[in-house]
Image (tube, rainbow, N blue to C red):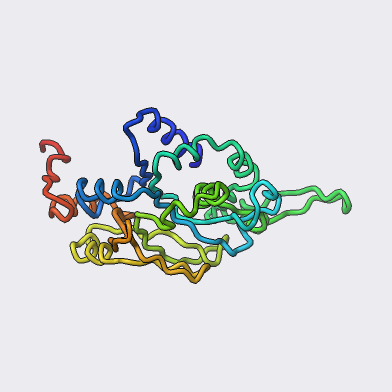
Length: 264
């Protein structure tokens, strides 16, 4: 994911006219029309990078030090908006990225449907015998790191640029906590379906004016140039049906959604 982001930014930087670089997922929807979003982004001289202290020990690998010190370790949404100079920092980085490649990796998932097929044989030389090991338990003990949630905010912190950013994302996500065998507290983004994509729902998102970061006891009141503004320009995850409803009902702006369906 990090490499893909860097390639996108590098390509966009080839055009000197590009001054803002926004990363979105394919399930994002705009909350406002293009003109409003453009003015919002261009009115600020700062990047918008969700960034907060990650106090959990599970993701930071001690071997990252001293290149990536613990006090510079950050977490945040991968959906970012960068000004040109910050996009160049990401593309030109040759210090932090190699450390992430080596020590910040996702733990492989276990296919719980396989049942006993998750058992693997291991030779124990001390006992001169073969024993069966539950691969799921073994994986659970492995270090687990999600690089796209840490790389950019950590790089910004290490580059001493946190004073030049708004430490929040412009993309709204509703998180749902679920329990799995691999992680007792796994968080997943809620998917909004057709029934959820109502004007009322979008208004609730658009009315959000602050974000609270529990790990820092910090409340980020959303501002641009000392003017209070809505926190979010985009929202996710919306299904295709939900997106079609938003378009057809003109929630964001006038649009004929039937034009996307072709002639029937």
